[in-house]
Amino acid sequence: MLARLPASIRRRAEKIPVVLEVRPSAAMIEDGLDPDLMGLFTGNAISESDPAPVPLQIYLYLRNIWDEAEHDQRAYRKEVRRTLLHEVGHYLGLDEDDLAERDLD
Image (cartoon, rainbow, N blue to C red; front, side, top):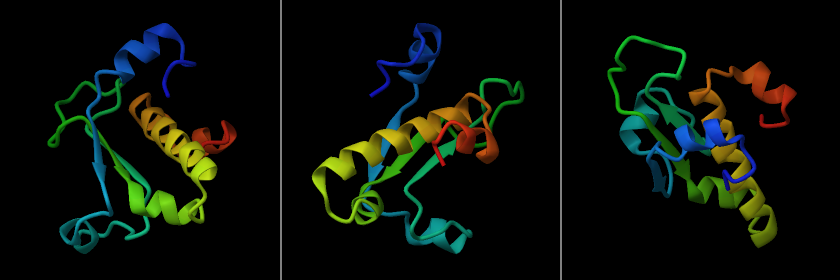
């Protein structure tokens, strides 16, 4: 899924653990996360120098992505890729506006 990224970015992105979950946990939702969230990046963006209080990870919430894809296999695969690239974008320091400009919102 990351093969089309420039090599320098791809090498960094491939080191980020990707955690596959069905949905966000009850504790995450209690902390204010949207129960329909499809992905989440935790940790610091590469531009940040302070240590992060949480590990560097990307979470993909597969049931939410499946629902967004309206249970269509092809749309699901496309949305998994898009969500992963969205979260990698956060790792690269992009905000929501930057991601929207790249059609990754």
